[in-house]
Length: 259
Length: 306
Image (cartoon, rainbow over all chains, first blue to last red; front, side, top):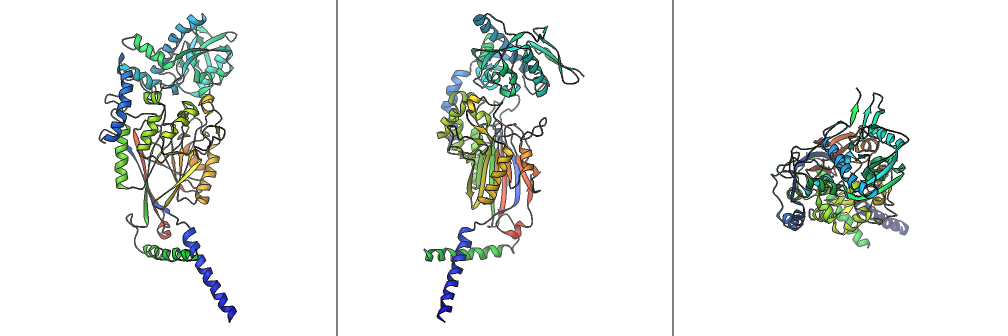
């Protein structure tokens, strides 16, 4: 009898322990019964938060002080999403980068840059129609990237053209022209209107980011020599805006596709 | 000790009874045993703090942090059970970043009470040290599972995943980043190691669902929605199909404007939601999850209204 009593005490404890385990350790599981999804546009119908506005004010005013001066006028909106192999804004940026960099390169190195390639992804905003300020330049070229001149062998220039075709992106070009044939091979490559010579070397201006192989531009890693001309791409843009009253775009054909 | 254990146990019994009782009543979202979790999300805000000007040709009068803050506040009043997250590329795009290095972005996100974010490629734009320098301004946390930061300054500061329990519902959230080589300058990401997002996500989902026993598993991804020309490149759509136990993928990187979340089937044939709301703070994504602990209700299946 004594034995039995002991057993029942044991069982009681076991029950208590089990209860405890069940409710304290076992986390309640939740199962999804319904999901709703929506996209809410942040429009002018939503009032501003006064606390955030007050907080932002000094920061905004400080920047505006620097960047609000109107530098030039843009007659039409330039949008990088318009164009298969080249865009007006891309041509514009590559042209001014080639011109402005050449002024520095010629003075410093007594050499001339042959052509320019930039990257489509590096154009971060449209150039809107209307007054243009330094802020516009910050929005188009927010990166702190600077212009770098890379000396490339003709072979790497050919690789550059093959890369261009493979990527199917309108990477900005200036000073170079090519045709994409029906087999997606580059032909009729000309640099400053002269056919590509595989035995020559060329001076190519680009951004430091791309010169290090950014956007998979690996051909730049095979460059013979690099020259940092210490000129930020954004400052090239700002300096151009300061030079002109009205922005002029030369959207001449740089890439032709054979049909 | 035992006495306290006993009390805990006995107090839990009435709760069990009420759950049993509920399964007999009909299901409505007002039921006490149905929990409502609202996930709010942004991606690729790129330092767009002010609204676009009224004469902007593409996004006139759209966006702005201050309006987003109001909207989030209103939603929190309607349902306090909010998880607010960002899928990366917080930095770079307006002079605010060039002038203040991301300080303002982090401070404003903290004011809006963001919970988690993941790193996008542009969050490395001032170098990994530039990112690290701004971390004290963030009250929210960064998650990234496929970037190994062990040999960088971020070691220990960015976790692979975090969990957060909201109204009793345990949510697991992990981050994924895009391949850095060829996209970000090595001098900026330094010794960060990129690992395959889909392999890492497979592990993360298993840990969060089966070890951490999360009720909802969310992936904050900056790998991109899909790549038309490179169908095998890791993307959110591939991730959704090639993994299991993930409920929601919140994406970024490709600046994809989805009108509503996409529903994909995972490895188990179960639904995964994939969403992305463009860029520049033009939109706020909202996903509402209604969950129940009642297996009888749950067995009736779920409805997805998008």
